[in-house]
Image (tube, rainbow, N blue to C red; front, side, top):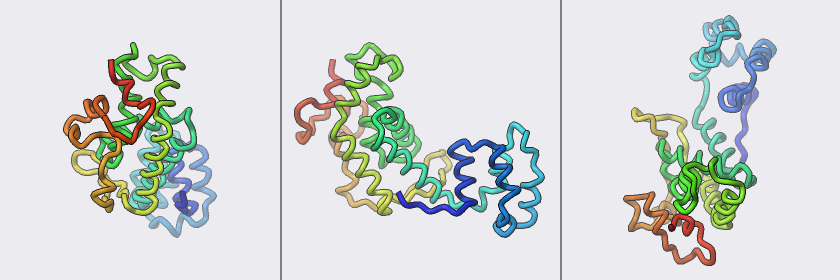
Length: 228
């Protein structure tokens, strides 16, 4: 993942997405000599005049600085960071997959497989488990479900990474009037086809996971956990 940030972008990104401590951000503001050349005079004075002990200070900072940020760049880093976490850490995989499910619901429809397939399975455990949430499953049950995703989940994560890194999917960092994320989809029709959900079941994604019969998935198939 090669997304280069300048110092201003890095500190602001960490504040917005990584919960950088306000005290550290405030200290950086006063020490960063180039800030005056980035902001106009009015915004610069307003920023350094803020009360950083205000409980709403993060919101106040964003009101001033958002206009100087290319949020498509920020959003690309945010989504790719989560995809790489999902790829590299089994411990973090369930939470990442559930995040993809929420992202799908918020407009990132290219997460159909990662979100509605694997993510929904984590969000709503299969019916043969006596649990309504992922947290209600014991460690053995959680590991059983996660292990059943492999090796296919790695392929599907890498596929999403490839789309974004090669600009097959261009994230805008902007939401529409329905608060759904907007993105530019440059994928081919073949690339848009789900490899998890059957085309016949596409109108009912929940049932599609249960009834999936893709021939390429052999041995222990992860969607069998949905069967009673």
